[in-house]
Image 1 (cartoon, rainbow, N blue to C red):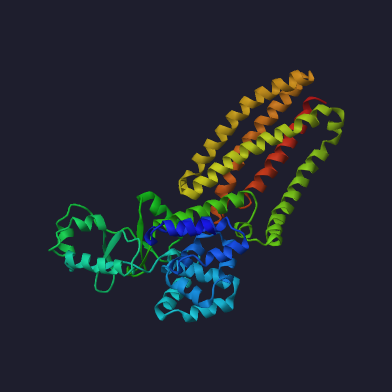
Image 2 (cartoon, rainbow, N blue to C red):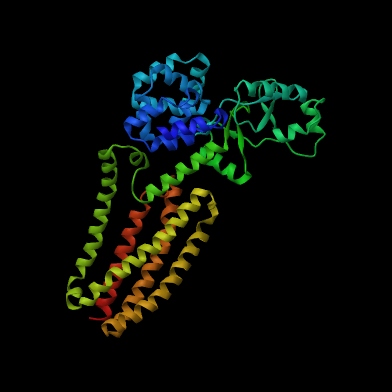
Length: 442
């Protein structure tokens, strides 16, 4: 708590950042957290709450009154207001209802409007606060109006001026740096017409998938993107800080999915819920392991006659599993980044198969020599070498095709891919190794 007091006293109000306060609060125990929260400037409470991990949101709500929560929501931008209210509803619907009813009508309408969008739609991530001007406005008047709004804290993080028609249809986007070099005595339209630069806006539709919007930001190196409806009317904007959050969320989701865990469950403190989610995938993995064991059981007599096979057998499956995971990870990540187009499937599969097959041949030779000198059986080296080539070939093939196939079905490529791949590499690895051993050695 003393650290927070020191931070607040040593910084001007304009220099205080919610993330810095959140870092300090995370280091405190429950009692100290409650006391420290009282020191946080009221205008920053909402931003601090959203900057904290989700598990701290309960503590924030418990330590604030309805009036304080209402004030916190009022100080947030429209998209953050929605996030705050959704978090509040998950904790206590009655408190959320009281807070909502205490807000002014403008805030209520904005929150209601944004909540109408689905989670994957661009509209659910946009801010409704935009700085607009008519094409016939004089530049000097526009700058004066902007300065007035900025001083009143009615606008934040403004990088662009959106120029609209009388019916609010977006026509041009002008960066504030360009606006400053315009002729202040002329209208915006006159300046645009006399400029060699293009001010045509790059827009996204409110119902567009947010993943596509993320790609726009990456492809065009944007800091902000205007959001329009089906009629071209400007209704909001998405800024780069929101895009960074979305990218991090998607990356985390994919990492969890590849490991067979649920990202929402893992963010929650409910141990039972997280345990159930993990148990689902572990149960599925158990059946795949039984399938692999069934294959081993088919060749029980072969294993009894040559113990060396039991010693070497895990190496084949392990190499295939790791090679397949490499291919799987690369393809899933490239799909997430939009680096794989619809016509790229064969190129990706060919690349991964060649890489896996090449590595398979190299390590097959190495392992074949090791097996030969280890057990003194020449053909045993041949068996494990052939098996490794077969298994790594299949690992590269399925490591690339499984996520591409799931993507074709509009299923997250990360979900279930590892279970399928592990099953393939284990079954193929054991079957090829023991089958070749039975045929060649016995």
